[in-house]
Length: 145
Image (cartoon, rainbow, N blue to C red; front, side):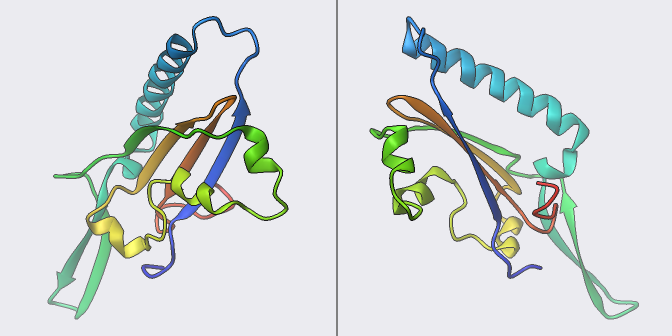
């Protein structure tokens, strides 16, 4: 599993039509998402760690595990893109720009030794919001994610 790519899933939402102050809306949304992530990580703390490898000398083997010491923690990123929802949905193929909506694009699980095991990127669009989640496949399978 160490040489498999991170799992990436995304959610696309339209902005509510009655938003008076778009900057305040985004700031409030980001604060609530950060608070929710912090609460979730209390229950799923391995996602806030990083991978570590320990060599066993008594029985020649290596053990890879989630370590919480000196960890980068889960990442939470806010980005903006000058795109609309229809720019994303109008193509019959997945637009290449969508890769930039995920923090850990083209990262393999072994990179979890130095990178976060979970990264959330919230990208504000002209008329919507995209929430991209990148997760180390060694910590969770694709079905449960």
